Amino acid sequence: MRTPSFACIALLAVTALSVIDAEAVMLNPRGLGQALVYPYYTVNAGQDTLVSVTNAGDVGKVVRVRFLEGYNQRDVLDFDLFLSAHDVWTGAVSNDAAGGARLVSHDRSCTLPALPVEGVAFLTTGYAGAHADGGPSGIERTREGSIQLIALGDVIPGSATAIRITHQWHGHPGDDTPPGCGEITETNVEADLDVPGDDLSGVGAIVNVGIGTFYPYTADALSGFTARALYAPPFTLPDLRSANSSEATRGVARAYVSTGKGTLAIDYARGEDAVSAVFMAQALHNDFLNASGLGAATDWVVTFPTKQYYVDRRFVAAPAAPFDQAFSAPERSDVWLRANFFDQEERAFTTDVPPDGCGFICVGTFPLVLPYATNVVRILPRHTIDQPSEVFGSTLSTALLPYGFPYGQDLPPIGAGWVDLDLAGYGASLPGGQLPADGRAVALKGLPATGFMAYNVINANAQPGKLANYSGVYAHRSIFACITLPDGSACE
Image (cartoon, rainbow, N blue to C red; front, side, top):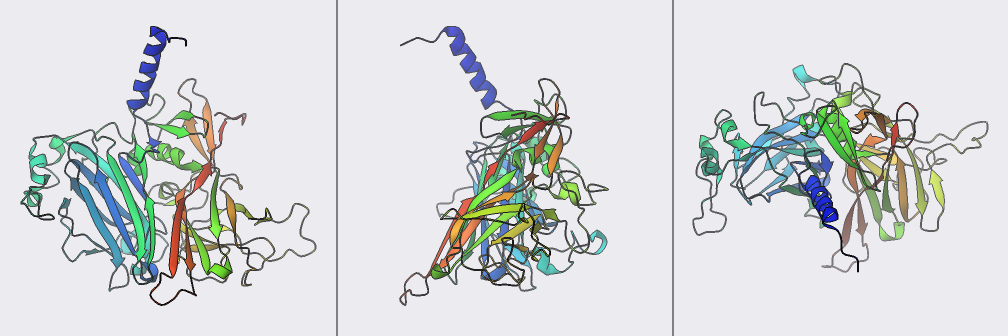
């Protein structure tokens, strides 16, 4: 056996340290980070969404919690959460009597402002009245969307804030209340904070107790999101625009993007572009199960976590790539996609017109359009007419249909298979990136997307008292594509 040289060992050690100490935005496949993205919450169809976040660090942490409605990612509720070392916070998003959604938490961790015992209703102020954006203004708009959590800083051990938020054990489980939640203000926290570590992890679950369905998923974790503490005026920030990197040499934030073959470093002048880069996908792949004999149905959640920064007039005067349509009346910002799907016998279907044309008159097929920031795609639904989706009861839904089946016509059973959802089919790409080594400009094909597939099976023949519903969740798989500009050659 050959013995490695000391020079080789030293090189490996330096390489390992550079990976461990990297200060650049990346999706952490191990699930820990400074920021978390939960692709979906809903209270439709009798469902609740359970939310949990864990601080795996040895010191306390302050976290901004944002609930975003699904049309245009306007805030419907936000607050600061104070997690002591090794703390877990939980809450549930449920139906509110007024017709919207409500967050209820019996967790004792400190929040600012404090959450009442009865919970707090989601608000319309972010998108109605003076803040109208062309979308619906009613409370029902709060019923589904996504969640984002961003670490504002780690709490310095021994500081006044650390003492206030640390749970005190009284000998009874569930009774260890922090002593100083009521003493926390916006102005007495900042001096007690340091750069946050990559210690946050999160899970969500959509549950319907009445029919026995449970759809759990893991939140996307962004490590290296910030190289500084973010708790500072104005307190409307931070958001995903706040990404920054000490490593960036050609901008404010560097993204480490997984190419499928390795990791590519790209610098961006804007934080939101670096976050978009790590979510970029030329295509999404996942399965579907629609066998009529099983009473099965499939929904895909497809969330664009940074879409608002490119389409919402709060942030841009005109729509910006990778999106090309501003959010406005009638209540949408369309993204046009292509899809190919395959059954278990290798039969292929597509949403596109066949290459050799469609004759004198093309068959009217429902276009594949995702209009919102959070979308639910009904994969080959039993009925194609507009209606809530079959699994989640979503009103932000689009039917994925093969070419040749007119909108409004019930589909023949295709059973099961998988879908290739092409996010770059109409030329979408994210520009603005630069390779740190030589400054070459690059563009990433597709759109920044995340989400999962969920299916439900109803056993109509179950005996009384036996389980009749079965559910499953699978994260999307994705394809990455990067090109250098202006020649268009591959850069990975």
